[in-house]
Image (cartoon, rainbow, N blue to C red):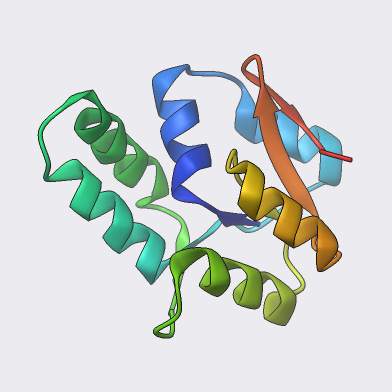
Amino acid sequence: MIFDSSFLMAVSRTPTTWFEDIIDRIGKFDPVILACVKEELERLGSSPGSRSRLARVALELGATFQTAPCGRARVDDEIASAAQRMNAWVATTDGRLSSTLRTLRVGVIGLRSGRVFIPK
């Protein structure tokens, strides 16, 4: 399971049983964060505002995840590429990324009202 910054920030904002909910939906998984997603969260975490705090909490959440390398493409493209290469699901709340992933036949996990769901 590859985690996007949007998902990690969303669960940082509203604590839920997201980890257990994902296991209930798809079974056991290894959490992965791409290096470029970490970099994105670090950039957001260093700027002023409430998003900064959420990004820092999201980085803490992802600290124990396996880190995978990125190339030089846009972060969303790197996520899609890594998901296809690793045959992995992606956890995101980004509608555009979710749509792209579904087109590529990559499994997607989202959040709705604080609950994990699989978009159709």
